[in-house]
Image 1 (cartoon, rainbow, N blue to C red):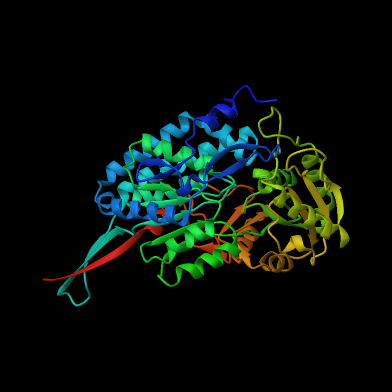
Image 2: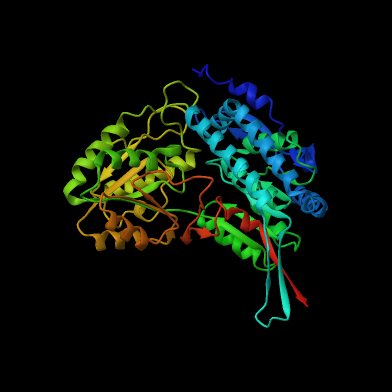
Length: 490
């Protein structure tokens, strides 16, 4: 049953071009090859889109190169106004974009609409940053020379986006690139190409010149992206995805010394101290765990709850998780949609089975339902053995693994005992402890008494093997700009 508040999925899918977008033109892939886009709620094919080749990638890069000089010279206000118009178009079409995301990715329509609003905000934010790119001028210490500092766009970029937030991850990268004056080749995830193709159409309608944005959908990411990075023609890579793939891309960037920014995996800890407001902690846990069915790099993975309140917290969280309605994201009243594909669900199933085999207790969920689609129920585990695989693996599913702790030093050590360092969550009423623990956590972001850290106005990113650089906020545009120093004797 579809949701009558949103346009039918068939209509919004039909309206999206299914071709590559290169040099301002919609074109077939080499050999007219196509690839399927599946509905994770049913396993059925929604449509087919162009399956780009390495040659198509090179064509897209050539278009970006050809457009770079003129685009860099475009007035900042003109770049700003293009982003502002694109922001307004996304807001205007939020329901259609939500229906599109739900169809190809599975998240419930209400959540998809929230992503459309979130995605639009990146364009609004960077439309305002485009006209604030500054420089500097000063007298050097010898008194005889002046220093002029200019900011210049990095140049042609390759942007690689994931499937879990297909619209927002596109705008989070495209927005600062446009604002800075960079051209780009966007390679979206093969599971969710439709949102990126729709976004290209919106930017074209907003007045973005041909060649500034080029979109290559492909099922052969490695074969398409690697030649771009090693060509010597790309100046920057911005990637969001797994740490494993990030390592591979870093190696590919090395020969040509391509500048990189990477938002990689996460293994977020969620720490609840004895003095925490348990109502707020449970509410924060629902947000940090269940946003996007747990398929988020910011998702809380490891729940460390003080022993004195661990049982009560677990019981409350299990009750809330168990009340969620699982089903197709397009159906009214659904809280939890399907996972992205069968491989993703199998991974979650295996991680839970491993934890149970090591002694974990399942309070709710834990069993794959019968029927079509890639559904997995919200699951709460207690008594999780520290050696369980889900303690050092990014779960990417609706599973909360709860372990008790006794002392502050102990929980900080447990939280930091991971190769990742994207985000951590801390719940306490003690201001001194809040600041102390926030400083000690080896992460790029902390949610203090909140389960939501993502905001276009804040710098998003991590430390350790969770990535390099930051996206969003005032520093987000810095990733797409270079300094140029001019020495002036007087």
